Image (cartoon, rainbow, N blue to C red; front, side):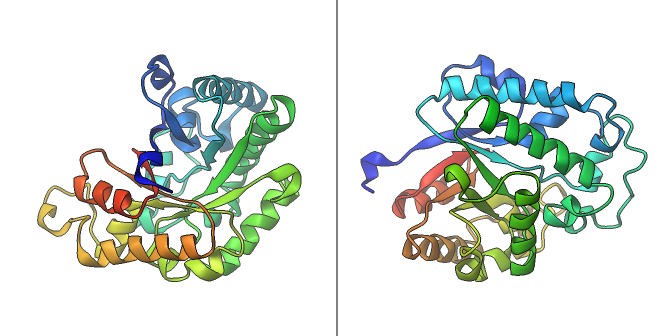
Length: 267
């Protein structure tokens, strides 16, 4: 890929973004979209069919903005702290360290997380099978190869078989373990999205929402930079697509991604 072919796009998180015709959309964060459009905890949802229809409508609108691009949709990546902000979230347990608790695969297979996972799978199936949209799935917070295998199995159980009719499933690289184990993990996935904010937070052990620790959170830190570059290299050697998800203000990370000739997604 040459420098002229680099692409830059944004993450869809709220319906209001669909009113802006200027920004290309490269990723749909289903957890954020659900929170803004539905705002009821999935375990307490009375009318799941209505919620599915609403989310599919938003996804279809997003596709009309980028009709020539696949729709990468990331499953809910929210922590229990964030999900407790939804309406009727009383069943959500209060975790002592939610950022490192039930997230991603561990949540989808849990009792509290299963209703949300089933709903999201129905959204994806409706978009793919009924609307014929070119959906690709992005899975967040995959902590081990065992979880990767579990995720592929759980998707298949819900009618979303990786490879069937060309369905692609990507890994969201958010943990140092994802970067270090990218080679074996890529056996389960068709590509990688490097989530710089989460990767940096877990690499440096810093809560970047804590104003008392601004000095410790430097996403251009050599450890973070090394993990990003190593992940990109492993994906490229495996001849699988890789994109870097970062903030528009992260100029050093953007330059790094541009230098590696990979797609850039803006939070």
